[in-house]
Image (cartoon, rainbow, N blue to C red; front, side, top):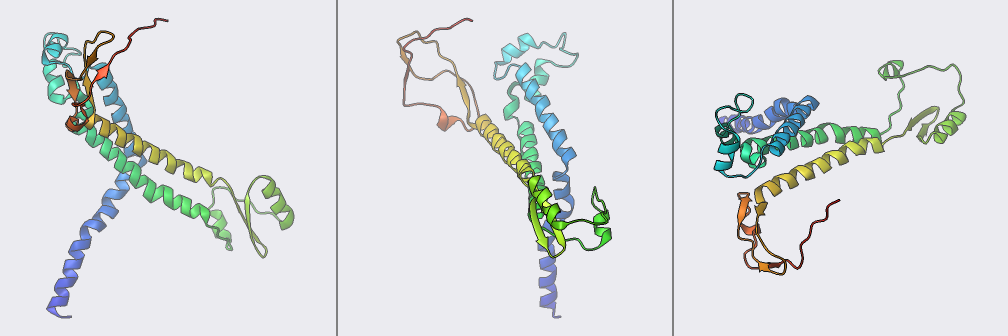
Length: 246
């Protein structure tokens, strides 16, 4: 092997090293169900805090409602709120990072576990050795059996039958393998929509009597990418406004 070939071989190993490290070390951690549960609980906790603590208010508001003396729960003051970003939880870098990490965990779990499980469920394999049956969660041995009667019985139970000579394979419930994939895809769409709404959404207030036309100008809260979304060249009209009490 020439020095050039040795160099190219080492270069190839260096290029593939990060990919191998990701598959061997990082991907199993991301696909771990325990990590997903922890992240989901963290998202729920901070979402609750974002609901309890008023979002997008002025500094004076937080100074008035969360004074330093006495501090709420002994530590929660207006300074802590502003430093931690609890006045705009859903747009903080750490909350968005948790969402991204949770989405990565769902994606890793889907591709490393759910898709392989679905692919495996669609295959059929005839076992021939007794030790292969011993690995199953439930197995039994029958002295005599009529395969034709067994096929009919399984078909009545909505099993899909595969037969090869004196061997029979039956399966059902493949929809159950697709369900988790659909759930994960739905959660990823919700996460993406939540992040997009946080970055591009805005809130405005206007005092408008019935019958008047106005433009949205008093923007009280807006995401960092909300500029193009804020209406500037069109107006709205309030024909009638009422409140029904029930």
